[in-house]
Length: 298
Image (cartoon, rainbow, N blue to C red; front, side, top):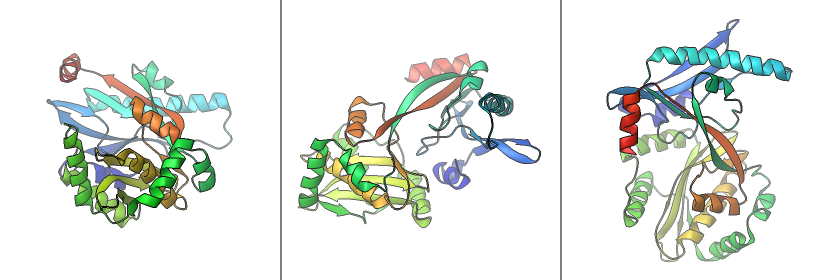
């Protein structure tokens, strides 16, 4: 939800983002950054690529009693929603950060909510405990991979993109983002020393898996993972996450897998010892025509 990140993940020629702000006594106490674009001729607010969460940020006063907190949240969110409704938006959809727990003011204003789940490895500085919490079968995979595979910390962003594109092609799938979007994001985070690519190779130097991740002082984020369809690539992807966590253990507090609602991916994250954490997907449509077009596309 920081300005530099919105600049990075919104396409250079399409940096259409802004923030709604609410102030009291000259202090900003509420904010809602958002990315907007034109889709089928309609103005919509949606998640930008590579941004898992947006939503509302609130600056809470200290030592606030619970009933006052609820009233405070309602006041702040109503002011932000009032501003949102002046934007003439046909459709709104956002993933709210998992620290946001009270969506009731949005419900009272006609929004809908779906609960989704991410998976988080907490307190990764305690690396021994993190390892102990991994499923025994996965611990065996990691120890085996440590002996047989190589960790590559120097894969170029161009090679990562090509690897991801080709690995999806093997599955008769297509990549969902362009190289023109990915490369500037990579350059920004590496310049800030907040992003990295880690890859795993076999004894023949063949790429098996790779991941692009970023971090701040609170958490690392699993932004993009690629895996080749070949024997051993599943074990390599498990080993890769372990190497990522080791890399980040002194740089941040937690590691967020950013999902998934896909059953197989969720099971893998659970076996890696990650905690299931709910977050809200909040949406609202103001156009029946846009609704129809969206349903037809789906």
